[in-house]
Image 1 (cartoon, rainbow, N blue to C red):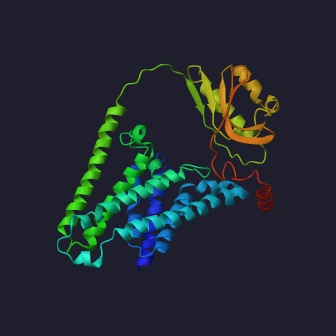
Image 2: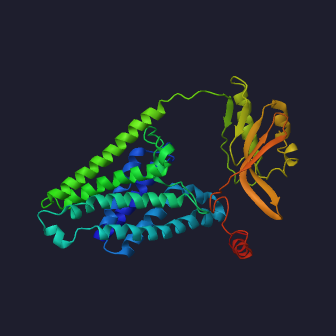
Image 3: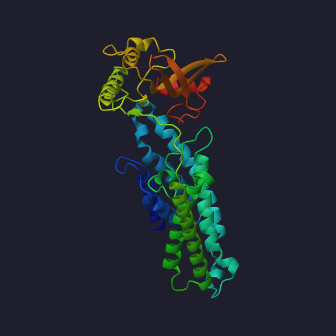
Amino acid sequence: MIGILQVFYTIFSAFLLSMGIPNEFLHFGSPILGLFSLVPLYLALRSCKTFRRSGLLTGLHFGLVQLFSSFWLGNFKDFAIFTLGAPTIAYAFEGYIFGTLFHAAFSFLEFSKSEEQLQDLTFRCASKTSKRILFFATIYALWEWSKSIGFLAYPWGTLIMTSFLSPLLIQIVDITGTWGISFLWALFAATIAEGIKLFSIYQKRLDYSVKRMYLCTAAVTACLFLFTFIYGIVQYNKTEPIIKTANIAIIQHNTDSWLEDGDSPSILAAQKMTIKALKQGKKPDLICWSESIFNYAFPSSYNYYKTSPSKLPVIPFIEKIQIPLAAGAPLYFVENGKQKFYNGAVVFDKNASIVGISGKIHLVPFAEYIPFMDKEWLRKIMNAIVG
């Protein structure tokens, strides 16, 4: 029965965290769901008796969060096994490792049977309550940090992503980076969960020292949020001098980039929306088109877009409206004899000449690039699986 509850708590926690991240139902996410999302996970891991069990539950949680929050990566047709499947498996494996860390902290800081029988615990014993909360928050923040660095970095699906609608609480990033938010959110959940565990299981025989230590920890957590809130008010209400302004028309098309007839529908949709925007008011200083507009890589495809799409070619269109345009586009270069592909942006001046190209420093693993794709053995595997 306990094992079933642990699995349920883990799945429920992953669901809450995924719903707290911006999605189709909550477009800007939910800080409330984010703050409480780890409470069930904490309770599940707190009751684990073995490293293996804790590792499996944490791996399940990390994998499900990836699956729930990035389900749209499954739309990559034959590549879905890599775009969604590979990261899910990778994060589940990492979750097993972090699960052992969680269990190491919990098992080391659990009250022994002899301590539970004591009427007056020593400060050292009572402080285990605070240490459990602190260790959980620290380890979880470490997980979100590790998820956001290296060649597998993909910070979507983190507590940080649930905080958008709490602007006064996220101003601390200029001091702590985003990891401060990860720590605070995890600390809140751990404090709530530890209180539930202590007062529901040990309520009749809960030692005064443990109660006092827990309440002190809860007070410290509340103070951290209060100080963060006050700092946020100060920073949020600072008036920064306006150095320069620009009127920008931002165009977000909505077409299926997997259509067999190329990128013409996307380009025509963006052009139609651009023309509509130009008729509505002041002439913009810059027009921005979103990514996935162009299928063919720049700068080599420049001449191609002089005549495509046939109804209204891109280059003549820019020359006609006489407004600089920036658009997301694939980029292709040969550097030191090696082919280089980037998901980037290309900038045209009002005469449709390319004046700027910028490629993303870090591509989304498995979605925008496959790690080790430069290796012959991996290319053979890819050709065998997806062609």
